[in-house]
Length: 638
Image (cartoon, rainbow, N blue to C red; front, side, top):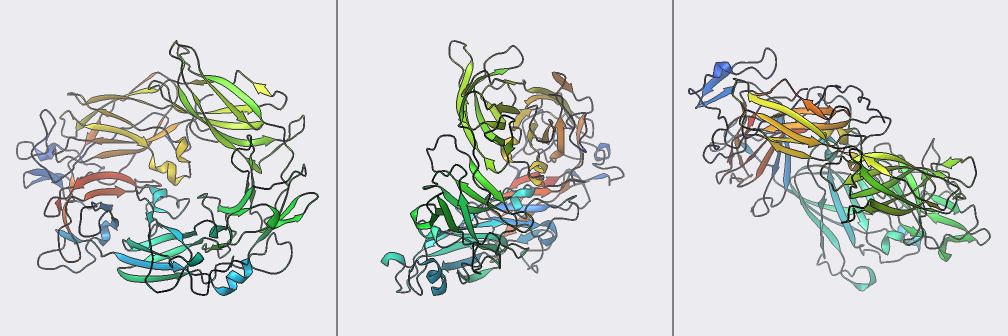
């Protein structure tokens, strides 16, 4: 397969990135790593980071640049802190001084972290909802639930060239995991379901916008839906009462068998007239793949016809998307029970205003597929993990015709024998066409996405072999822009943040690689080389960051969304990567009572020029006084 450049990507490879400034600084970096100091070094020798940028000046013993850079600060407070333990705050640089200054916390020198929001809530279904599903827990009893808060963007910055696929902060490069609420038992004297305690949930959260998912525990999730919606958390104590409209799907009537109730009802049947007892059905979001409805098991309770076995399923949902329709961007999934031999899931998308459930079609029985994994250079066996993901499932015809309403994925392992024999795998698959994501254990082979066809006329199909390209050697050189070689810097190639912003699933991303510059500033590392993407794009895309030695007071430089094409076995980067004089961005962080934020990890993020996602441009650590030093190069650019 030939390499083709991704749209808008440079075909000549990786421009490499440099530089770190982690603080507070304890001593100087070991020689011969260069140090940003003056007047020992002439500040006028530094080249500007951008054309016509301001010149460096000498101040407080360090060459720096009097310039402004828009960035977002991500502050992770340690779990040993009295204030906001294990919490992460996201603060745009323009909002760092939103709170009025005090005599001890002055503007431009000190910034306040906001107070936490204290959220307490319960999921109490209305009596009317209990009547509709014929499951009664009492008038004021609450369901046991697990609750997740996923941070949302305040709004994409103007510099972002296109909106992210979701409004979640993780989709544009921020390292923000969901916050999981604690379970609590309020002392209100009211018994919960089945006579147990009346459960609730409790969370401490930084102020901001979140997607909140309140998911009932089994067996209640078969009757009462998750409550999914956007919430705003502010500083202070907030009480949440959810479940007041637990069966409404925002007036969606698509797929109804009859009646006018607002929660969607579906008829499910199989073309071969086999029963579907033990299968499950639910609705999920097409983008995030998260469940949006009750989770119903098919069986006697919802079988409406015996011949052929036909099931009537109500999938209650309490989803509140911006569009106002709960079924927008939604799939219906009909899932086989665990242990059934290589049977695909039925996926029925919501299209053109209707959600018509296709009959589960006739398909051939699954086949046993076998093969080997090798490296193209020399044909050596390569141990690997394989993920098989269907694109088309063939029907029982000789053409073969196919359906995209069925989906199947599974894993297999290929292990090289100690005697040098082939690394072989064996897997059961429905007949059809697949993407196979191969992640080799061998350090010399590249991760790849390869194609596979499982034909209709053979029950056992051997010889389905995968040959992996070797990794690419990438060479480069880095130096300080005043002409000194950049020794002792860490060079990191990470999967480009723009991949998540483009909706590329993480299993298709190339793998991270790390190396260190030599005394003369040269470096070399090996990277995965495609194919990794769909639609014929077989370039691997990285953000390349060069981080000068800790204590050097030199900034990181990030070269975003760089592509490594398939071709020659070696790439020589003749243009050096230059580290400029930094913009000093250090501060003191305090809590709302002006106590220092001690030993917090502080990370700075910015959207590159013409970019689609945030990349990390600097990192520091606060000291016992809440102070940190942070040196930034400016807005990243190709």
